[in-house]
Image (cartoon, rainbow, N blue to C red; front, side, top):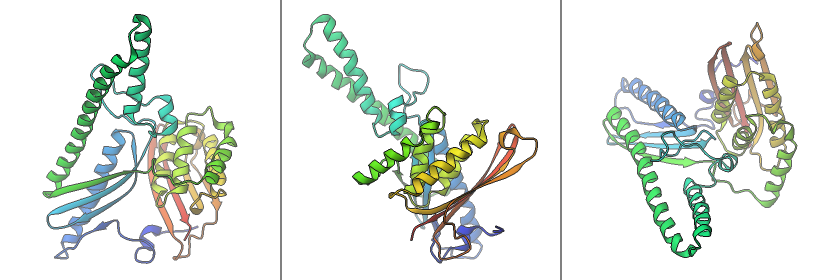
Length: 323
C-alpha cells in the first residue's frame, strides 16, 4: 500500500500522545532524552523477556529529581516465578496454570500440594487433620515469605540499575493485563463458542498461548506490540509457517466478529522464507476494515525483524481500533 512513514508518528498530536514526557531546557538536551528513552525501553523488554513476560505498553515521565515509569505486561506459559530451595532448576507453571495464565497464584499451587501430602500422611498414621493443618499453614507462610523476598530482590536490582543509569530516584508501576477482564455473561458464552470452533488446532504447541494473546490484542487498546511479539516467538520455533498463518487468520476473524472486540480490523504483513522456501515471499493478512490512509482513524502499529536458521523475517502489524 506504500506507507513510507510510521503510522504512530504520523498521528502524534491528532489522536496519539507521546509515550515519554520531558521538558528540555536547551535544544541539545532533546537528543539526550531520546537516547535515554530508547535505552530504558530496551532494558525493560530484556528484563521482562528473561522471566517470560511480554511488554504490552509503557509510559515514561522525566522530572528534575524523579523518573516515573508505568509498565503493562502480559504473562506467557514460560513465566518463571521463583527459585525454590529444594529444586535446583527454575520451576515453570503447571498445566492448569498455563491454561489460566496465572489466574491462580503460585501460593495457591503450593497450598494444594501440601494439603494433598498431609492427607496421605494422616490416612497412614490415623492422625487428626486439624493438628497437621496448623503445621501446613506455617510451612506455606514460610514458603510465601521466601518467594516474596526473592521477587522483591529482583525488582530492587531492576530499580538500582535504572537509578545508576539515570542518577535519579526511580518509581515503577507494574500492571498485569491478564487479570483485568470485565466480561459479561453473554461475552463469556460467545468466547467459549469461538474457542470451540478452533478445535482443529488444539494439539498444536501455539494453541493455548495464541488464543490468550490474540484475545488480549483484540480486547485491549494499544496491543499491536503483543501481537508482533507472539508472531515473532512462533516463527522462531515453528517450521510449518503457513499452517500457523491460517490459525492466525481464523482466530482473528472469529474474535473480531464477536461482541467483546474493541478493534475494527487487523493487517499483518510477514516477509521471509516461509516453510523454508528457497526464495523469500511476503504474506499479507487483512481482517476487517483497515482505513490506513485516514489520519482520524485510531491506529496502532508495530514492526520487528527476527533472525532464524532460514534467514531473517520481517513482521508488520496494523490494528485499527474503534472510536
